[in-house]
Length: 149
Image (cartoon, rainbow, N blue to C red):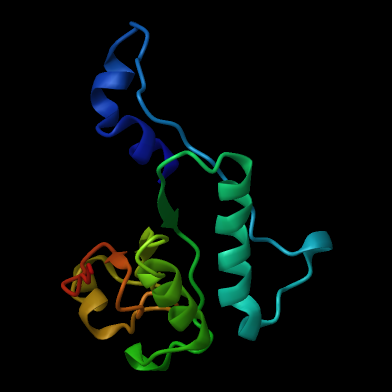
C-alpha cells in the first residue's frame, strides 16, 4: 500500500533504471502494542488519534493524507458505528481548523474464498471496523460506499 501511495503505477518505476523524482514523502507510525501484547479494542480510536498526533508533532507544517490499512473484525456490527469508527469520524471532521483526510481500509475477508466467489464475496461480507466511519474515505477491493465530507 505504501509503494502505491509513493510511486503510483509501479510499472514505469520497475521498467526504468532512471532515478525517480518524488515530490511527496511517506511517514509511518506503528500502532502495535509493545512486546506483542494486544491493545484493548475499546482504545483503538484513542490509539489511532495518538498515532496521527505523533506524526504531526514531528513536523506540524506538513500537509498530510492519513492512510490506515489496519482493520479489525471486533465490533464490526454489520456497518453500525463503533467507538473506533466514531473516533475516526471525529479525527476527520475535527473543527474547522483541524479536519483531516483519512483513507481507511474496508477490511479483509478472513475466510478462504473460492476463486469463482470473488469478487461477489465482498458484497456479502461485512465491512470491518473502523471502515464504517462516515467521514473517512473507505476503500476496498470492491467497495461501493465511499463517504467524503
